[in-house]
Image (cartoon, rainbow, N blue to C red):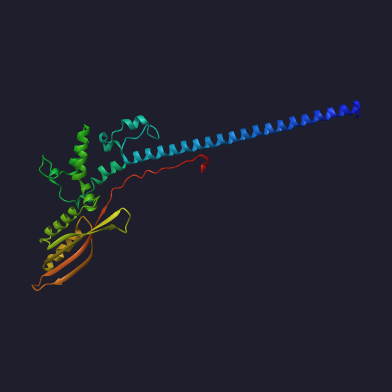
Length: 294
């Protein structure tokens, strides 16, 4: 039997206590590390979420400013009380009840005032339709008469009617006549036929070629082709070409052949291209914002 002294027993007890103390220390450090790591992860996650929310709010503010600027520049509503429109101001806004005089400097104002009253455009305008006759004078409305009618409008219906008169009976009608907003073969053939009649002749044949394409001048400018033929004297052919050149609607004669017939008349055939431009829409873009900026 081995006997141990009191001194050895005391040393063993101290070593056991020190070992437990070290274990407690290691566990405490490990627990603190885990707590610290969890706290750092929570802080990082919170910072990312705060940054994400800030980016979302910033993007929303930019969208609100962009939409407000668009509404102001076009003249859909009167100017807002602040820098951007409020929900209440947008709910109360009715474009049909707002006069162009209430939105000066906007696209709407420039169209209904500056372009509609342009003497340069009016100098090449076609004769207005029967709807453009002033019942008081029996003649076509002048821009001053149209402007006075628009200025005197009190109700929404009167304002809309006066606005439509300006669009169809003022110098503004030259713009859709010169560059229509959609492909219309019937209108194109009617325009060419009218040029023939103004030139004192009728076409031997007149038909669309069925060829349409995007013009090289821009992605929104499209072409539509027409084929025509006439047999008449040289003076009439020359008069026809001059009237084509003076036409409000632009024609590009791409290919033409001239032959003398047996009766000293000219057989003239040509392929001509006219143009039209599709309506322009506002492009609404979508911005995707992801957590963490990825």
